Length: 84
Image (tube, rainbow, N blue to C red):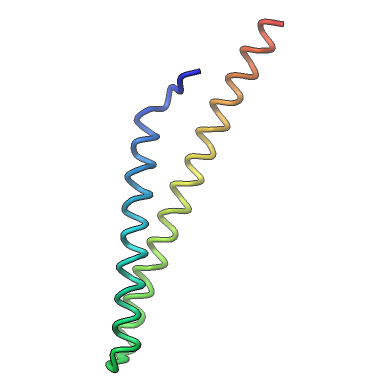
């Protein structure tokens, strides 16, 4: 069955990509700041905040995907029950 939520699935893919990039860049920045000898507390907090925001973006996108999958599955169950 074709999903009715094509635009939302594109949005979810974009949000996963953005979240992944934020997480990667935040983690790399943290590693360079922490192990680079600078160890400025504000910079460490900023880099960890970017990484955590990236993870939260991924979590939000995955939760949205779960809702869409549930809606699709519920629709299939309804069609199956109607045909019985």
